[in-house]
Image 1 (cartoon, rainbow, N blue to C red):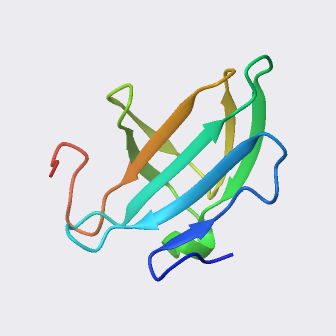
Image 2: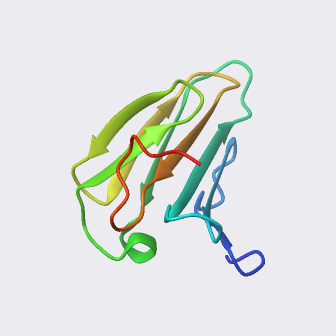
Length: 103
């Protein structure tokens, strides 16, 4: 479901995880995927397909902004395992932008 003009929820009604993609309109970045596990006791797994959003099947380079780590997802279906009560904020660069460029 779309919320506003620049955000879409991708968590598929997961009982403990909220996931949303927000397009970035102010920089060259395509946008951000924010994923939060609200279960305080149990790690949670979620699969998110980004191909409809990013327009390709991969690979997808990104920076995880909370840990300052970079990674490349080889395909559009992201398999994420979140420890209890944690979040990930993945930043996907736009065309012509490298992961090293930050705004």
